[in-house]
Image (cartoon, rainbow, N blue to C red; front, side, top):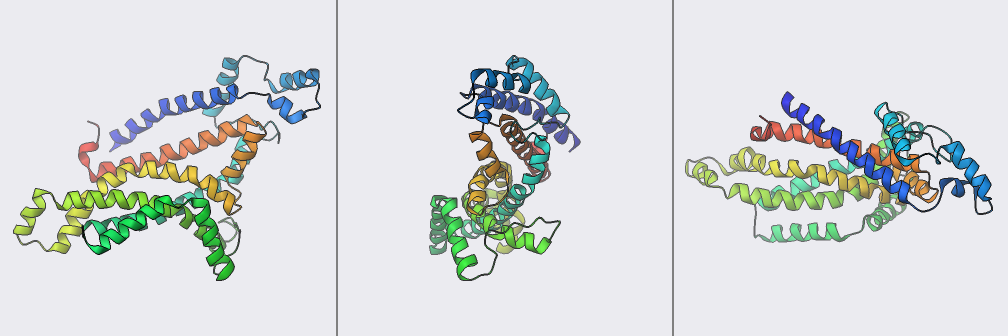
Length: 314
């Protein structure tokens, strides 16, 4: 297992390097000047040039990248052009909301997806299978922002079960935090659950159709034991292997969901930073989300290696 962790950590280094180069290059290629965006349309070319020199934007791109990447290795994401404060401080205020609803959405997706996938996978071709599978198609088709508005209207406005547009940090009020992330997590989890359900169903059907299952059936092993101990366990291997992709999808979708529920997360900060050409903040958000995806994939790879020892590097 130690070899697997070391292998994945070593593989993460070039990933981060490639992502950092791409992100820095894309922000550099965006037309316009951050200095001009800060000063406004009435600024003179001399004033823009002076501010660019103060911000270090007049230096060669390679020199700026080396300085930025060197700071990144030490946990320094730079300073916001507009706010004038460290990007790490800005992200520290925004990451909790995003992480909360993404992890909540992942929990909902796994519960819905694995449950529905195993249920239908053990009953292929039945009416229940067709109904649930049709529901997954609907779950994939519904836009998250529309689902978020629907959930807010029903459960917050009509029924009053949860607060409307309320975000409470976990450290201030754990129960209030939980109530505040329920609806955003549901809005995220439906899409992820539909993806996982279809994967789980296909894997369960394939697993239960394997020759060794027929052998165990002939040996008198009860159906319940076959499903729980052999079929489901083997079906979870491909699902776990692809759960990292689902997590990455939920992070991207969370930016939209944050807007619907007015959450102080990375999504709204990313939007304002792109519009305001606050590139250090944009780069910091992309790198933080990339680190989250890599970390989750590392944990999933460890779990995958425990379930499937053949996947471990020799």
